[in-house]
Structure formats: structure tokens, C-alpha cells
Image (tube, rainbow, N blue to C red; front, side, top):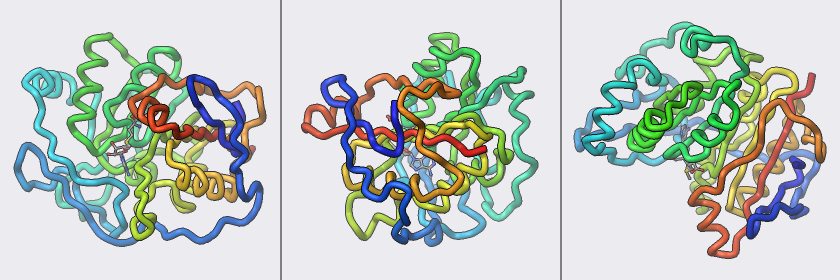
Length: 285
Ligand SMILES: C[S@@+](CC[C@H](N)C(=O)[O-])C[C@H]1O[C@@H](n2cnc3c(N)ncnc32)[C@H](O)[C@@H]1O
């Protein structure tokens, strides 16, 4: 698979699209993550269970109500204390984070670590972790019901190499992940925020990519997919402009698998005749 030149997946095929507008060139300016705080409702209450950020930034996600089914609540109560945690330890939002995560203690082993940001209901997370049992995966999501669905699937399929963090992936990268510790970062179908006035809410911005690059180990992989053409162009520009990354070469052996299952976004894109663009970068030594 190639990288900074996006790959289109149509009808199950992958092909080069050639819309890599500025390979190795300069990125236009995009807004950073500074702006509004957000709150999240849960179970109909107005309690902000995703604590607000200490510094204000535009959030890349929407608040969604998250009533769980009985089965999801049962799985949550039973499994969350062991395999889940909040990105921010308090609800006040103004308390400092503690130490970065001791992932070896959390997984009870030493293994390459992948962070997936915005895992949704975890379709890709589950399939990719099951296919690579020697790699540990931390899935980050703000949407509680999505995480609950993933928890139920982890339980049902007895998967042991996934851990969950509820909250903002930027918080996780900034405070919980050590520099140079990740073998991979996955971002599949990040919200495209199609209206121009909302582009500042897109997750894939230069500061985020710089942060991700700092958390990757040399040879670590950044894998991104989107079905939104305009966002694909931005992703190509921003990723290619990050000096710590280089596009993966065609056929190059990579530290993690890049085989993704088809998710609902794939099916929707195919139905609408849209291409899915896929990007792979490797952290420079
Ligand atoms: C369009 S969905 C894609 C879900 C999943 N990756 C898939 O392919 O099915 C994007 C998800 O990213 C989550 N998200 C957006 N910004 C996030 C952030 N900063 N931290 C964690 N999750 C985020 C949203 O809540 C949403 O569930």
C-alpha cells in the first residue's frame, strides 16, 4: 500500500487516485485546536462526563446522548474498571493529569502499541486487534455507546489486546502517551466537518499531526482513511508537510497491518459512488 498519495477503495479495489496536491510541499494554514470547550450529556443528564479541557480548544466531535441498553450497561459495569478509563481523571477539567499511562501494567505484557482515535463502535478496532494478537490496541472515543458496543464485542469474542479510553484523543496524546512509544496511530473516517466554517473542527490539523509524530517511535505508522474528498486533500497536504513523517513506499513492509475491514462508511461511500482515500506515513528515524 502507498501513502501520501491516497489510495481509493472502490468496489473492494484499491487504486491510486493521484490527488496528492502538494507532495512534499508547503501546507496552507489551518486553524489549530484553540477555541471552545465542550460538554457531553450522558443518560439524559447534563453532567459533563467528558471533562472540559484545561486550555480551550475547538472540539472535533459532537455531543451525543448515550443511553446504553441493559446488556451494554451490564458489560460496562463489569469490564470498564479493568479495560477502560477516562482521558481525564476528574470532572472538574481543571485538575492536572497524572503520569503517562503504564501500558505494560494495563495490558499485563510488553507489546507494540497502537492508538486508534475515534473508533466509533469499534468495527475496525476489533477486527484489526483480532488479526494481530501480538499488538496491543488502545481505542479512544468520546461516544459512550460506541465504546459500549465495542466492550460487548470484546467480551463476546474474548479479545484480550484492546483497552478503551473515553475522551478526547488530543488529551490522550498530550497527557497519557509517552513520546516515541507508539508503533501505530489509526484514524479512520474522522468527522469531515464539510462546511467551511467548521473546517477548524477537523481533527487532522498540523498541531495534531505534529503531536502524533512525536508519540510515534521511528518506523511507526500513521494510517488514515476518509471518504470525504475535500478532507482527503487536507489530509494529504498536512501529512506531507510534517517533517517527521515520510510517505510509506509501495509494498514496503510496515510495523503494523493496514488491512481494514469494510465498515459502514465504506459501504456508504461505495453506495454514493465516492472513493475512500487511504494514507500511510512512516515516522522518520
Ligand atoms: C465518522 S466516525 C468514524 C468512526 C470509526 N472510526 C469508523 O470508521 O467507523 C468519527 C468518530 O470519531 C469520534 N471523534 C471525533 N473527534 C474525536 C476526538 N478528538 N477524540 C476521540 N474521538 C473523536 C467521533 O465521536 C466519532 O465517533
